[in-house]
Length: 226
Image (cartoon, rainbow, N blue to C red):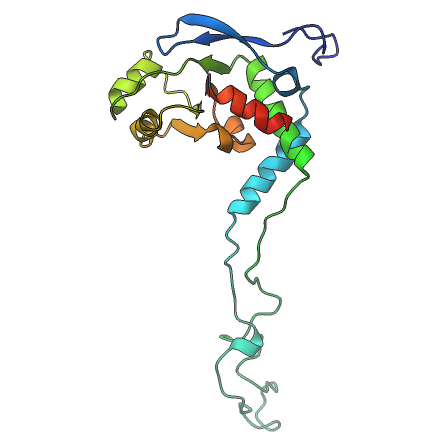
């Protein structure tokens, strides 16, 4: 990929090219990637906004306290107005008393918000481009996984046992193989498997190494170019 002195991709000069490797790490071919997706200039602000959106949508917002009107208790005045030497509270529900209602307390609400579609698309393109530029994005040829075997699959994916946080994005492939990959890696904390349709900014940023299986790229391109 060619970059100009400003640090931005020199569009129209060359398309980003990536080597396609197999599960053993050998180069088997090359693939051209869409410049509009994998050569986007870096801008941290769309990424920050979309990650805030994703984290906010996970906030359950079930916090709740009782207001004065929701407290169960007698409405009778606690004691006479004068002659006791005390203040003059009128109810056990008063926010000034222990067990009384809470003033302006939290109530259930949704924290979710949604940036414009263009911002969400741009953030995903920027994250993919940055991973490619940093040498943390790899394209891998689809591999056979005929049975659920965690140790065998990890030894093939990471023979040096680096235990690097890795995101594997799978595309259109045999359903049995897809399920076998997911189940083989589901209990390994430093591996995450996602369908291409579910690729998102948070998981791209949260993982050090990104492996795109070759057939996931057309799905990603169709999703982001539409």
